[in-house]
Image 1: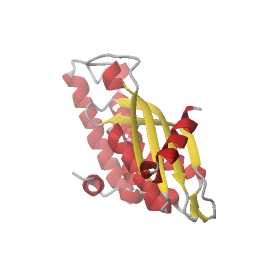
Image 2: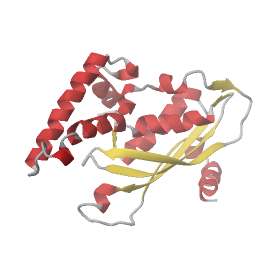
Image 3: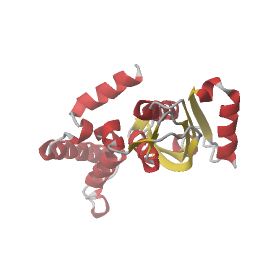
Length: 212
């Protein structure tokens, strides 16, 4: 499945893209998710009606809705009017953007930092919007490899730069809390587009800057 097909399938499921979900529909979804969490608590051998767990299903449902709120956002929502005409042709770099997302394989978190660089071509993007693009894609069920590529492609779509570079360094709790249980393992992924892919010097400059 391509990125576009994935985007379409998830947005059509609840028709929530771009904040179009009605309050009634959201309440129905919250109720269904609350019931599902209550069933899960029962199936692990707990009593969802005891005082300590009485409100847990709804809290968990609301938390999951927040963790996945990126499905209700679009790039147009995020970028809004923050694209500016500017004759700047040197690298723009924002590093150490904190990120949290959910692994789509086990529904447990992974977290770390995102570094973004791009070479403008007559247009620049408001710096805070780079972090908001990261947030939008992180607030979905993800794999780190796809997340890296989605962020890079979104910046290309937004400002059509000469090149984009994205590096993510993350800790995956599916490797820490279960399975191999390697607490100190860091996963690094990158996506280099345009000049960052074609020009080794540009790529090296970016990689050196994010290490400094």
